[in-house]
Amino acid sequence: MEFVFAPLSIAFLAASLLLSSPAASAKTEAFIVIDAESGKALIERNADAQTYPASLTKMMTLYLLFEQIEQGKTSLDQQFTVSRWASAQAPSKLGLVDGQTIKVRDLILGIVTKSANDAAVTVAENLAGSEAAFAERMTQKARALGMMHTFYRNASGLPNPGQLTTARDLARLARALYRDFPKEYAYFATEEFTYNGITHANHNHLMHAFEGMDGIKTGYIRASGFNLAASAVRDGRRLIGVVMGGLTARTRDVEMAQLLNTAFASKTGAPPVLTVENDEDTDQSTLAGSAAHTLAQLSPVARAEAATPPRAGRHSRVREAAGHWSVQVGAFAQQSAAEKAGTTALAKLQSGKGRVVQVLPPNQSERYFRARIVSFSEREAEKACRMLHKKHLQCAVIAPGPTQQMAANSTHRGS
Image 1 (cartoon, one colour):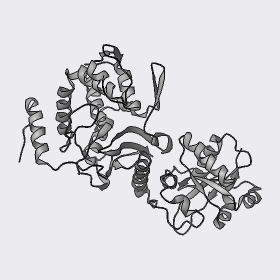
Image 2 (cartoon, rainbow, N blue to C red; image 1 turned 60 degrees about the vertical axis):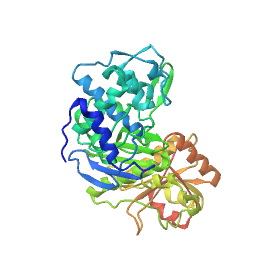
Image 3 (cartoon, rainbow, N blue to C red; image 1 turned 90 degrees about the horizontal axis):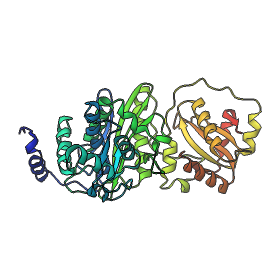
Image 4 (cartoon, rainbow, N blue to C red; image 1 turned 30 degrees about the vertical axis):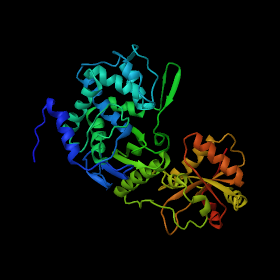
C-alpha cells in the first residue's frame, strides 16, 4: 500500500494508521546502536516495537526549531511569547509565565538541560500557531526522515496514547540532528544552564561518566519507562544508541554503556564486557542487583596511551593494602588508561591521604585492566563511593580478596 502525504491530510492519515497498528506496550524494552556515518544498525532488540517517546519527543521539537534557525526564519536572540497553555504545562518546566517573552537560545537550553515542557510548547506555538499544528509538522517531518512508525500529538512528550515511536526511528532522528545541524547539535553537550537565577543540570548523567559522549536526550513517563538517546565519538568514529523502557534511570544508563562499549569494541577486536561473573575478589552480595557495579565494569575503552612504567617502592604499599576493602572505578583496555581513571577518581575524594591506586591486570576470563582505589575499611569504601557518585563518577565497593595481590606491579601512589 502506498501513501501520498499532503499537509492537510497528515492528521487524518496519522490517526488512521494508528488505529490499524498494535497498541504500544507499556515499558517496552528495546534498544539499538547505529553507526552515525552509515546509519547501519550494529546491535538491536525490538527496535521496531512501538512505544511512547516521552521527552525524546523534544528531539523533533528541536529539529524543527534548528531548521527555522538555519533557514534564517528565526534567530537565537528572537523573543518568543509564552501563552497560558504553555505556562500551565506539567513539570519538568522552567516556570515560564503567561505573557512573558524569552529568547530562543534560552528555550533551547531549557529543553536540552531541564527538558522543560513549558519551553517546548512555547517553541511549538510560536513556530506553528498552536501545539496541535506543530505536532502535525512533527509527524510530517518524521516521514521525510524515514521515521515511518512515529506519530506526534504534542511537542513535549507528556502522556498521550497516540504519541508513538520506535527505537529505530529515534536513532534515525538523532542521526539527522547531528548530520543536518552540526552547529546546533553542540547544544546537546550543555552540562548546565542558569535561568532566572536557577541552575539546571543536564539530565543525561552519562555525559560525565562515559568517554566521548556529547548528547543527546533523556525521557521518562510512567507508561514508557526510562528512555535515552545518546551519541558518543571515539577515535573519529561516532555511534548513536537508543534505549527504551528502562526500569530506572540507572539501569537504563548501564544498558546504554554496555551497548556502546560493545559496539565500539567490535571494531577494535577488544572483547565486550557484558556481565560480571565469578569475580573471585568481588563480594557477590554487594553485586546483587547493583547497576553501579555493572556500569563501573563497563567504563569506556580508553584510547591507547604510552604505558607508565612502574614506580619504585610500590610493592610494599600494595601488600599493606591487601585484605582491605577497595573502590573500583572502571575497566579499561589499556593499563595507562586505568591508572589515569584511578588517579582522577582519587583526586575527587576530599582526602586521598593514605590511599593508593591499584590496577588489576587481565585474567583468564577478561582482557581488561580494572582500576581501584585501595586501603579502605568497609565503611570508608562505601562513603568514598557515595562521594564519587555525587561527583558523577561511577564506582563499586569491592570486598577483600586474595587476587588483590596480583596487582603489586601495577599500583601507584595517590596524593
